[in-house]
Image 1 (cartoon, one colour):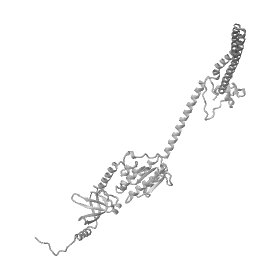
Image 2 (spheres, rainbow, N blue to C red):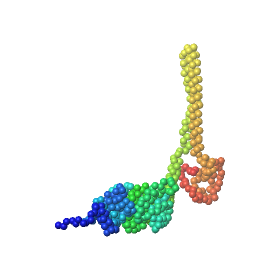
Image 3 (cartoon, helix red, strand yellow):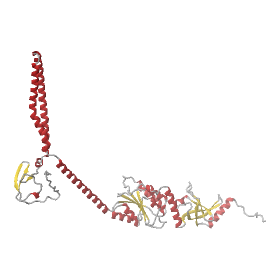
Image 4 (cartoon, one colour):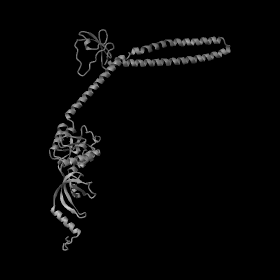
Length: 471
């Protein structure tokens, strides 16, 4: 067994660790390493991220410094298969080697889809995709906010479609829709629109559209970021997601209040067709006017029915008049008969009494008789006054119901030879003698037989047998 050579240089642990570090870094300045992320629990309080990359038979420690972590479009996710670009170095404190990652990208389309599904399950578990959270879109928004790139066909398509259907005031918040920082700009735009005061110089939108044209999953990745999805879910303004083509699905589509297959379709969802709305409003106006006409016709029919059912003034006053006349005729006789009966009773009583007492009773009886006569006179006057007031009220009612009030307003009543009112022009023939009654008298006339059609817009009312109409 060979003994160690005593002339080998002596190294300290630190010197050896430094030499190994230089050797490893010189041999592997930059590498692209494929592996599965393991042990990632989020960034450290310092902002750095620590985890491991592994495959079927090996693993290597990995670190991402804070500045590089902030620039990364794809953040580390536990279990995600990635391709890491960085440099190999050692960590002398633990005598281990590690990779310092400067760029991170998913390993193929499958890894991206797996990451999307993982985020989708996570956000759905938090309730961000619940239907109960979604708002109804306004029927006709006054101001529409659009979050998209100011360059390209998307904004032109949206503005053109809005102008065709129903022109609205549009506010555009320009953002990058792909690349580094795109997700932060999109989320900031959504939050910025929501932060606008309702009565400020810049009007607060009633509806938001987040739009982007089609592209690969990598191009649309900004709309899968949590910061964008959470901003869309927390928006107090109704939001339409119009990202990519109809077959493209991003996580913002699940958080938005409505998903449009294309930006043009989002504009169609935002506003109705103006011509169709005008036709709809006109239809409502016609229906409302027809309902009003039917209601007026119904009220007129009820009024005519009530007028026919109303008794005439003579029939209303006939019985009170008879009772008043009978009472007036009986009152003088009743007063005389009552006085005579009391006088006879007084005379009979006086004949049976002592002259002195008789004289006293006679005096009292005379006084009582005079008092009763005075009371009877007052009662008769009051009764006659009430009857006269009843007659006056009945006379006013008769005057109110009389057709002569209508004649006093400038109308005339046409009567035929039999002195009955004529209700229509068809009842008048040539040469017919008619009488025209005005408020101050009648005149005779002879009809020439020509009927003039009523003016357009005036309704002709059918004549009714029995009672004539003065309306």
